[in-house]
Structures are given as C-alpha cells and as structure tokens.
Amino acid sequence: MRFSFILIGMMFFSAVDGISKADVPVTQMRRLYDFTPVSASNPILVTIKTYGIGIPISEARAYFSSEFPENPIQKMSPAEKRRHLDELIDDHLFLWEGYQEKANQTPGLIRLLRNTQALLMQETLTQMEVGSKAKNQDDYQRLSKQLLDQTFDKAEVIVSNEAYDQLKATVKRLNLALAPAISPGAKPKLDSLAPEVQDRSLAKCKLGMITIGDFLTAYLRIPPSQRPDIQTQNGTVDMLKRMLEDDLLIEEARERGLDKAPIVMEKLQLNLNIQTRLYALDQITKKTVNDMKSPGHEAQLKQWYKDHVADLYTYKDDKGQIQVETYDSIRDRIENDYFDAMNEQNRAKLIQSLRQGQTVDINEKLYESL
Image (cartoon, rainbow, N blue to C red; front, side, top):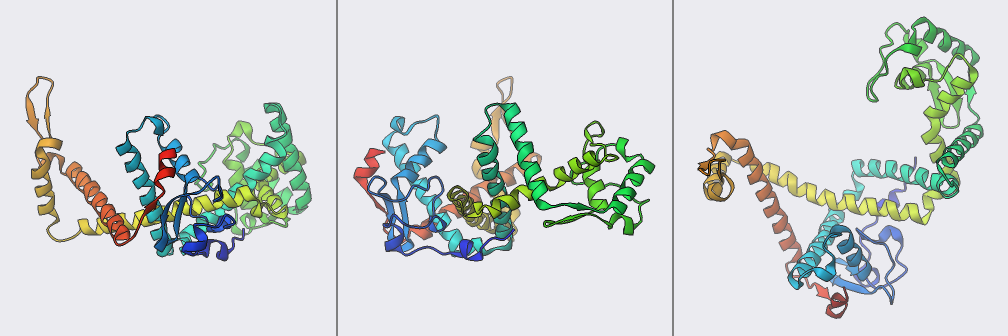
C-alpha cells in the first residue's frame, strides 16, 4: 500500500486562514470529534491565534455528546460546562504539541496509518457493494461472495500444476487435513518439508506470490472441520480466496480511487489527529518514567506514603476497626499511585507552559448556545 508522505507531513495551517476559511482541506483539519467545515452555521467557538487553533461549535457539541452521553450539557452546572470546555481546549493543545514534535513523521505512525487507510478502503468498498445493497443476512453473504469472486477472477490467479500436485501429496502424506488448528500468530511445524518445498511458488497474481509454505500455514490455522478439501480444485480455489480476500478488496478499492474518497480521507485524518495527540501524551509518560528513576526515588515514595496514609491507605475492616496498610505490604500500589500523580502533574505543567502568554478567545455568546 502507498500512502503520501505529503498528506501526513503537513504542519499547521496559518492562524488566519486555518481558523476562518471554510475550504480548508480535510488533511489540514485538526479536529478530534467532528469535521464539519467552518461556515456561517458552524462558526469558531474557541481561538488560540498564535497556534492557529480554531475550534468550531460543531467540534464542541460532538465532544460533549460523545464524552458525556449520560450527563447532557443542558444538565451541567456552569462550572462543569466550563471545566469540560477547558479539557477540550487542552486536548487541542496536546494535538498541537504532537504536530510540533513531528509525531506524524515517525515510522511507527506512518506504518499505522498505512494499515488504517487499507482497512478504511476495504470497509468503504464493502459498504458500497454489500452493506448498502443487502436486505438481510443471506443477501449480505451472497453479495460478499459475489464481490470476492469478481475481484479474484480479475486478479487472474495462476496456479502451478506441479506445485499443486506436491501440495496435495504433502497434505495427504502428513495427514494435515486432520491436524489440530494452530494459533493465529504461531507457525506450523513442517520440519519434514524441505525448504525448497516450503518456498516453492504455488500461485501467482498481480498481488504477488503464494508459496506452499504460505498456503499450509493459512490452511492449518483453520479448524479441521472447516477446512476446504484441497484435494479438489474448488477447495483449493476457496482456500486461495480466503488468503487473498483482504488484499484483493484493498486493491479493488484503490483501483476505484477510494483512497481519495471523502469518508476515507476524513476517517484517516481523524486517526492521524488522535494518534498525534496520544504521541504528545506518551512523551509526558516517558518523562514520568525517567523521573521515577531519579536518585532518591525510594525516599520520595516513602514521603508520598506519609502524606497520603490517612486518605489512601487507611480503612475500616469488617469489624469496624481502623487498619493502616504498611508501606512494605503495599509498596507496588504506592508506586503506582505516585506514578499516576506525577504523570498528571507533568501533564498539567505542559498545559500550563502551552497556555502561558497565549490568549484563548472564547465566543461567549456562542458558548452560551451550547
């Protein structure tokens, strides 16, 4: 799969254009909940001009409805409402920080987004050709099979007769048709098969090559009662379809241009933004981990225990007697509590530094309409 480095490498758009124009491309939208374009009916609620952050009213509404479904905003006190709005602003500051740290250019995130794009393309194609047309479950199964058959035929899979004969003989000789299923991540024990047999090309198509070893690995992951009969041509084709299904659908989606479909691009950008924000939070966690390794850590833990023994480590037993948990008996729990507190403190410090000297403009009239 190919994924444009330009797409995920874009930095923040300018403060003026990014927070006021309605025609900002999806790939430049720094949203976490909603991608409705800015317009007269969807104006900006929060602006941090220096950072180019503009949070429209739709983003705030989506945030409140998704994060607090059991506590509608209409029932929140003014203090609750403002506190949660500040949390949304903090999320956007973490998102900004993640982009500043070039999280979107890290190999791990690039790889994750490639896989995500493939899944979104496959999902969109399946919805177009199956989900939107099926009237019931039988219809869904029939249309799914029809789509797979069409893409398989289009791929022009060519099977080597000699390799196929060798595959059938191997399955029969090793009695693999009745062998127990192996776990998804495990490899089958095919020690009796020579490397040249395992690596022999069984089938080829525009997507690549399938070796005898590839085929047997996938075959043995299926429970014996559900395995197709590969002694027959139909059974072997069925097995190849199972193996190629995801790649066939992804390739078909790409040929149809679904990698540029609005729904795919929007969901992909949402994933990128979420992961970029998480990257910034992960950097805070890494700092906390390093802080926990500093000299005097044990003394800090003991001081934490003394400061919180009354509110965290004292309880009443079933007889109503007050019991105090000793430091040695719950040291691991104390360390976890201390870590959580220090991590939250580091998060607060980063937010404080990001907000320092910045003007956070809130459209109060619009805010009241929430």
